[in-house]
Length: 353
Image (cartoon, rainbow, N blue to C red; front, top):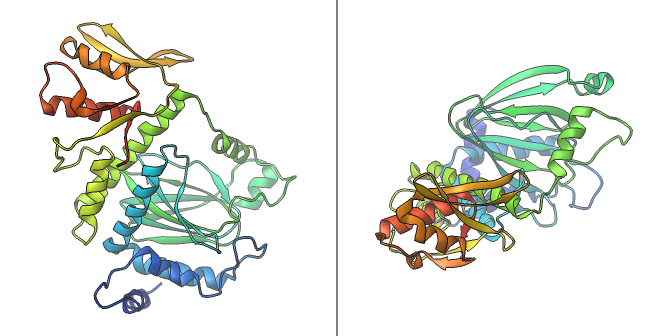
């Protein structure tokens, strides 16, 4: 898409807003989907290819705009605050009536999604850093029952791709930094098109994605992963100077992020991530550790010097407490450091205000 056309779309979106609030927000992008070109969420037909291309242009027009990104991240944090458990591309917003989903993808250094199939239209934009996307010949892969490579694409920040026909691909972060992507998806994506067709690697991927481990230590692992994402949102936002960025950073801090400017004297309540999680403390070497039992034995989550034994024993015996209640001969900064470590470990979460 040429730069002139993208700038026209960006200006068109801005002109549709009140003069006193000329910001690009998620609602403005959603308006571009609600013009009768996309079927209802429960419809069986797919939109025309031209409609998806037009939607891709609208995404291209906003993906480089930090105001838009900050607004989407604010929605993401609202969802994270309501739900600790996170699996895959959980949407932070679903467009009413159309069922179109908006989600962020977080990519640690060197990570990949694994080869998977899209069976309906999707639009993917790189918001921060970069990705590379390997595609596979779908027909040949199903015929041979093994992945057949097709193309490899590099996608820098601001790049926007789309899928219309069913395809198999594997995005990867080839860098040593975190990447962030925005995904806009059809409500029908993921439907299996041919019940008799089988490609083992895809079946294994679907099986992994459909698994849900409801054991308490698994809840701790999910909470730990979500806390990593909150830290990354804080870092993505820290260098952004647009309206709303300070609110997003403050929200990250309320959820336990260790970002700049943390007020360590603000009252905060920690709650255990799962009431079934049986925490205990053990003496280790010259210190004390907090952990819990798993099928593979006791799992250490936090270790301190022996001077923190009273604090660790207190945390292991409580399901909720104020940071200021942590006992021992500790400074306020040391109590906050313990609280941050507990949240980072996934054993406790910050209680929503």
